Image (cartoon, helix red, strand yellow):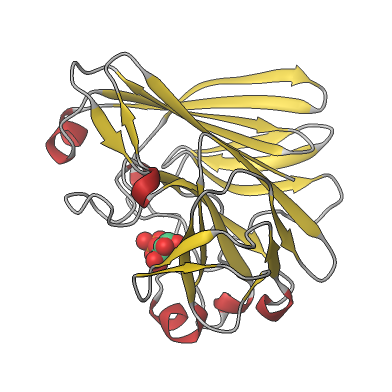
Length: 267
Ligand SMILES: O=P(O)(O)OC[C@H]1O[C@H](O)[C@H](O)[C@@H](O)[C@@H]1O
């Protein structure tokens, strides 16, 4: 698998061309900000378990005609450029264009770009351009896996009073207080227009999204954790996914010639 490595004065990162998949990011002298399964496959055609899978042009099974989370996370992107903005900042641009294969799965001409900026923050901009002559609909996510010291120590702040879809029961509910983890959690928070914080025992991670009002919070817990591919049975203790999304009712319609940017900044 082809991997791009970034190393500057403020941070390091590793990005696989397959899926434009960032699977490592750490500020100098600090623990990684992304979780990666220690038994993840780095095999062509299989999504890496951890880091930031790019779910596109469908989140989950939002488009039932596509594979779960769409096709981008296992597609081979092209490396357009790596630019040293300054000694602390590196910008990497990866792109994916329509092909005969994608047109068979999803009949639209598109250009997809992931712009990754590695500095004391990790910034990801997922830009969808419609180069077809008909409108298309996307749902998507930057499906970030964050490491936690232990799942029982993790708290998510910034979602209090937000409506959410409980994907396990299909109920529409309202969050009360911080999100904590005592069972399987698979929720699509809506109307999220401000920062979300992952508060752990010894650090707080900030997640800021633009072009998105949905945030997916997921931890598979014990039973689903055992069924997940490419992770250990007890790995659910070690991570939480907080996904910067355009999911379900937060889908985007993109007109011919138009584009949409989903941006997530984490630090
Ligand atoms: O196993 P994957 O296809 O990578 O999906 C992993 C998870 O992604 C999202 O968070 C969904 O909300 C979950 O329902 C799903 O289990």
